[in-house]
Length: 188
Image (cartoon, rainbow, N blue to C red; front, top):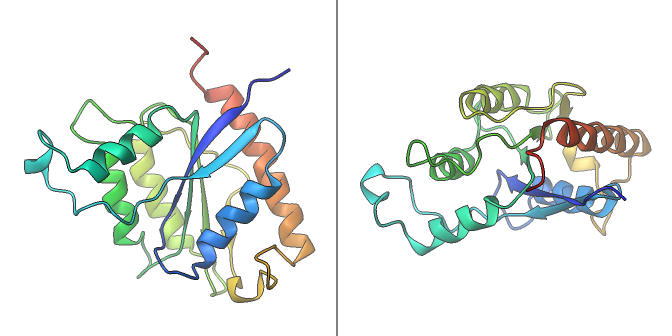
């Protein structure tokens, strides 16, 4: 039996009724056997300041402790001004510092952008990928996931109601599971 892979999910939206959070929860519910998705909260993190590295806030310590044991990373985010929301960039800065002590390095990752607009967060997706390359996070290349029309995607219970999108996301999760197996650190 294959080992269960734990995936830390970072959602780039703090809104109470965030469509990106709904997507993260829907994906966790439909994840294939052997893949466990768990949201790691980023809303309580203070703004990153290198002066605080020697004595990090408790929220930063907790955040990094939740990411460190994960086998992989999944970023689900909207696009703000053709880029990554500041709250997600802030979380990445905390997770990757101090230099040489990143809790992200070497973990296989994937990016999904979700937007009410037609282009599905293309700009945020690519900006995030640029940062992840620098941070030594091998990112799933195919299938790329830019999901538009987010306002019509979910039913009243938060399930994905569009069958073609659901099928695509199942394909995405299957590809991601394979990517994790090819790129995860060997078991100790």
